Amino acid sequence: MDVTSFWYDYHNKYSGSCFSPTMKERLKNTLNVDSGDFGNCLKDYGWNPALIDWTTYLTDIKLNIYRKVDNFPIAGQSTYFMFDQLQSIRTPGYPNNFNNLSSNLICAESGLTFDVEWNGRVRYENNPLPGSQVFVSNNATPMNRIPAGALGNTYVSTNGINYDWADQDIYFEYVFRFDLSSLFPTTFIANLVYVNKIHPIDFETTPNPFPSLFKPLIIEGVKGTNPPVTITGQFCEGQFDYLIVTMQDNVTPDLVGEFIAFLDPYPYGIQNLQESDPIASPIGMIQLSSIPIYNVSNVFNGSAQFYVDLTSLPVGKYQLCGLYHV
Image 1 (tube, helix red, strand yellow):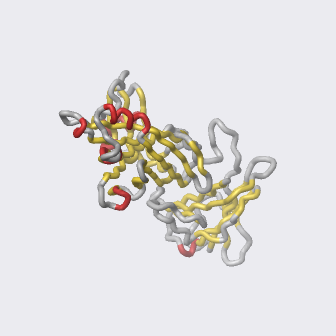
Image 2: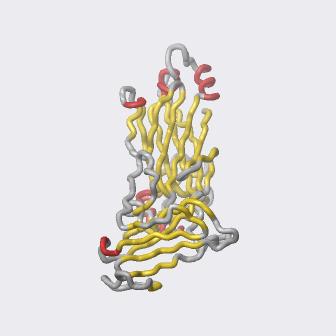
Image 3: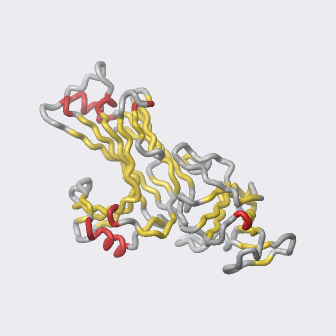
């Protein structure tokens, strides 16, 4: 098939099948799929485009998001660590003829082509992948994957697999399933596969192999109108009313762009992440709350700040992060 792929971040659109975003960043991947040479092949086996659209043969679309370790557990095998498995079923009569079983995988027919859209965020959590989401295949038949079973947790531990995507190749594998049984004297299912990849850039200020563009965050606590006190560790409940968080660049000339602030309550993860950004989340993504975050700098020009209202937060652990974006 002819597949046109685009990646999107907060503002920008990139053509191609590879992309390097950064941690916590919103992402969107879109595909437009036309029949291409596959349509010519269908004609050779009796498809009449005057009578039926080629999309009629499509039964469902699956998206597998995974990290892969080659030649493990033995040479000639690969292990697939599945972060997510999504599916949309072609169902005539549904809106755009697709029953989107997962809210962040949206498929739709568009004339004689169909569109696929995935919305999500770069993962950064340290919690390990469940062993039930580990699969193994022979390299000669990579799509014939079997569950690792009781060895799944061992494979996760051995390879240090968690939901932190930093500096890793993360594959987005789209599987298009066609039922061509009507063109053959026996059951005939065709799976066409298209693969994208991202390689996320780690958090500053410890990137590798790139030099750091940013200095560590400066966090100051304020009680009432008292002068700010620099905080380098834990502090007691009620000691401060709010925090002033400053992010600065480490380059000359200064970087200029948009500034986005994050507050991440423990247990850290995209389900709890709170974000201050004027741009609404895409369809399929939860719009993140930013109630404890205020006075956010709209523009990053060498530095930017945001405030955190401690009086509205329960006692606990929190991670603070600033995102410079162009």
